[in-house]
Length: 79
Image (cartoon, rainbow, N blue to C red; front, side):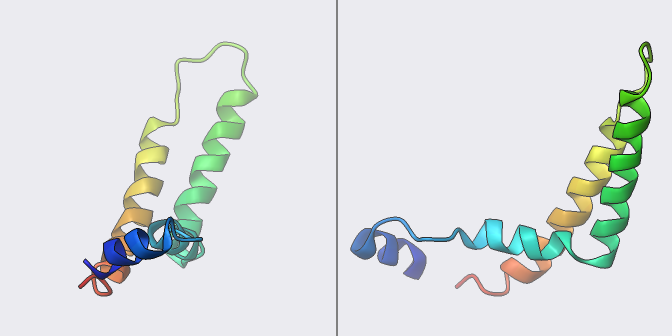
């Protein structure tokens, strides 16, 4: 409720706490590892002219790792 009151009183905040936390979590060791796997897959798929492979699994693994980190950090600061 405090965040909403600040928005009403001061307008839109300069930085979104969710986006800030996502950026911090992307630097965590597990997130870095899953991002590397995603980038390797994208490079592999992009280098082929005809392939049925896509990087959906790697993308979901990265998003899951990042959101798991965010959930543990962000919800402790929500009042």
